[in-house]
Length: 296
Image 1 (cartoon, rainbow, N blue to C red):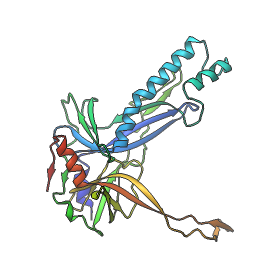
Image 2: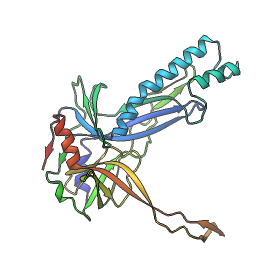
Image 3: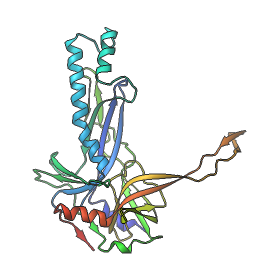
Image 4: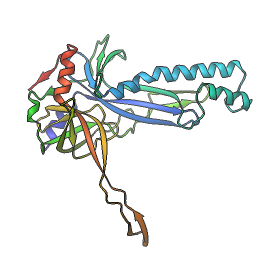
């Protein structure tokens, strides 16, 4: 049903790759998100929370750089020598929990030849514009066409989302000598794309205006910022998040047979539904900022 549409969507939808190292670990955790281009001028949209993640890179890395400088100045070794002084320094820089992020780096994959961009954040919706600057070559070959009349999006309509939820790229490493994470040229550089379809279940309103679309299936992590489209490849929205609704089926233990034995499990059932930014809200935001877009 969506074969031809997906082939069209692929031409202007791109992954965002992230690598994170937590302070108390040498392991790198990869992550992914999605953006898509709306015209031939290097202008794209994604979720506001994706751009905020991109913007956090400088702040997080600058803090860790200052931490390393002070650690070196005080003669404290990274391996824990002079543990008391190291502990005080960790408290100062908020590196006391296992959730403390030490380093973060991002890549906007296969978009343009320029790493430079400006951004615009929507004041209330999970929506942002990215404008690439100083571009000499574009690496996408098409751009989105938005649905002209958002009133066509009615309950029961079949739609599909597309993005990069599975961060299977491996082109990164941790330089233990310099205590630094980096993207590299070795390893797998891409992430597999993944579409997921469903039907429109409800509309989401804000101040009595429809701004979102609820889908019968969940949006997957990494699909944030990816297009929501119909069978013709016309963009009807953008994947933003997933909501969970408790279904009330966890009143009793259920006996199951697994690996040849019986066990009792407590069933906690939730319905996961995708939340997307509505096409009309996207077009209003683009129009407000003078961003060229196409519709049909």
